[in-house]
Length: 359
Image (cartoon, rainbow, N blue to C red; front, side):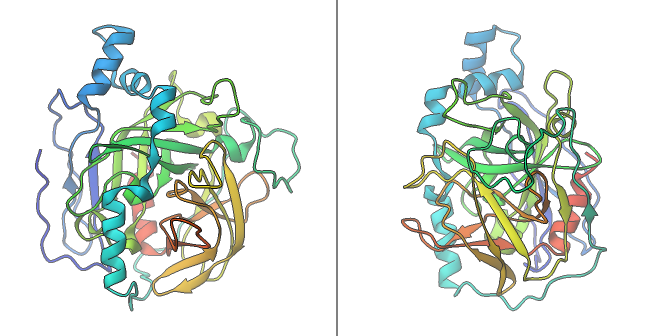
């Protein structure tokens, strides 16, 4: 399926792009959505379940296997262990080179067309364990609110198997996971991610590293200026998750709140699954600090390594819950990072949230 071409795009005002989670062996009905306020239209992109995943699913579950079961069957423990940080992918490195060649700066001011979004966290059916609000141990138990609302993302793209990080966010539909745009699409010259899955509280120290199972997405959304131009100011994405055993992901685990237009300097707790040395991608880790302005984006001092892409930047984190105000987007070094950048959550984030919250 070819993507429709968008013309006349201003990078300061990117538009949304949709990816339907439909098997490669079927033909989906085109999704329709209202045009963006600046006159551009929403683009439909690709499909999401590979032939290899369907084959794995049929082998395990038989001919009537569902897309969810096919993806879960595909991501065997061995495939998960062998998946590499998306920051090592050719598409990510190409996007980073293009950004560096443009001097990595932007004069764009934050946009304020829409009202700021302020959505509180919600605890979910699993409740809140009696743990200290000062919990800073990175080895959180799998039922801890912060652990179960964070997870590791697995997907295929451009012939490789990759990992990212993501977080469950409260929404009207109770079904959203936020991550980075490059964790669902590689940008110009690349493709949509396939076999996309989210594993809450992933922990390879457990006998079962998937203590809450594998969750799959029915829709993946990001801004088309990321897809068309690797616009790092729009490097954010939303996965609309399928139910599991009839339960929506936010109802099951709870979800962090969401805030935009909070200013460039705020206290951040940054979570993710770093896979580069000295980490192995097996555990949720955290770093914290105050963000600062960096062009039209924000950055913090943080030594999480590759694999942390898409992990949440939480403000007002109380040891259990916080408010999403950024996602890991770019880092200053693959070998020994000390800085991470996030898009600034202004109207770009507000509009993506509002558009996807009720789906």
